[in-house]
Length: 139
Image (cartoon, rainbow, N blue to C red; front, side, top):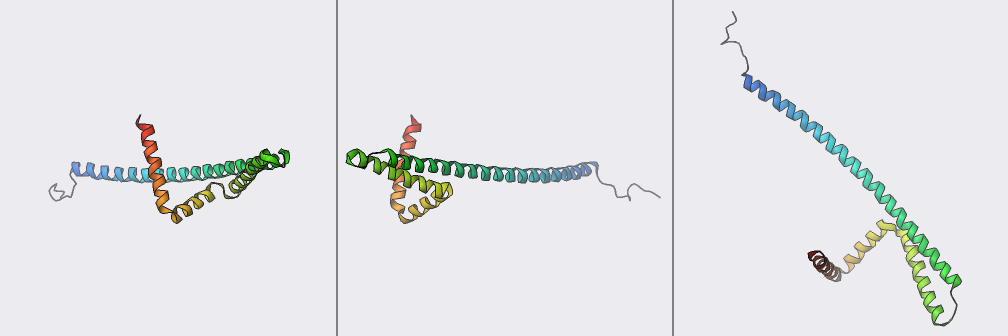
């Protein structure tokens, strides 16, 4: 009849190992899902922060532009002071307009183009900044 030697029964250790493997596979799946959700949340947060930073830079640009216009209105039209005020106002207006239009994403693109056009000076500037940062943080 039922002979224990002919009945296929798994070893208790093997059964425990199989259950542990199944449990581990379930844990791995849950960890993958959690990591995916965390990655999506971080991506969403980064996008939101990027938009807010762009808006902030645009606001700064708008303020600079309007300050330049006010300087033009209030500054004298002639003389050394008038020329200096005009130059400052023109610079503020141009810089403000640039910040309003380009924001951070546009500035990053412009910086990339500048580095591509001038790789050696960009490399030297990077080395110089690295040297200064190293000296600052070393002490």
